[in-house]
Image (cartoon, rainbow, N blue to C red; front, side):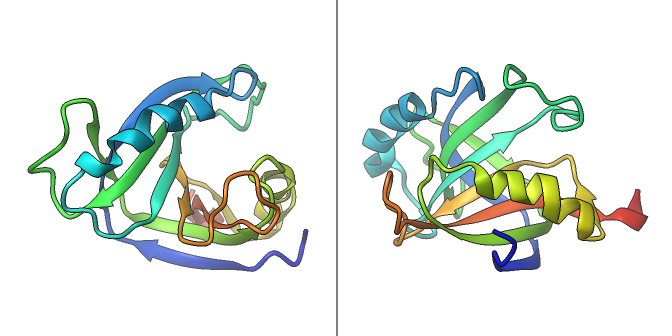
Length: 164
């Protein structure tokens, strides 16, 4: 797993429209979240691409004192150019801009070894630390749910360790 390509990117803030749920890794209701979101996609105007975004907002210290029962907010979303026509069943969210480590991942979306590598190996050897901003995955045209050939981008918010 240590040959996983990574790049460091700075992005501007992004406007997202989506649906959110509170969950934990021990009560991971991601399928339920997406089942509630996908039928509403056709009602979202001003989309900037066909990509979907799976976003997580963790509390400060979530990973330092990690347990599978720690709750976080999970979003199923898409990027939009403005918030002029947000469907009533959905919410607007502004993703703050900033520095991200971006991992190109190919494999099953149920295989957590990439995250174990990122948080357990890569981060401690990178010169970066986690920043308290949302984490997200970009599910583009090569993403296939439950397919070992699926591809996605994993975006981890970071800051230089000297910036602490």
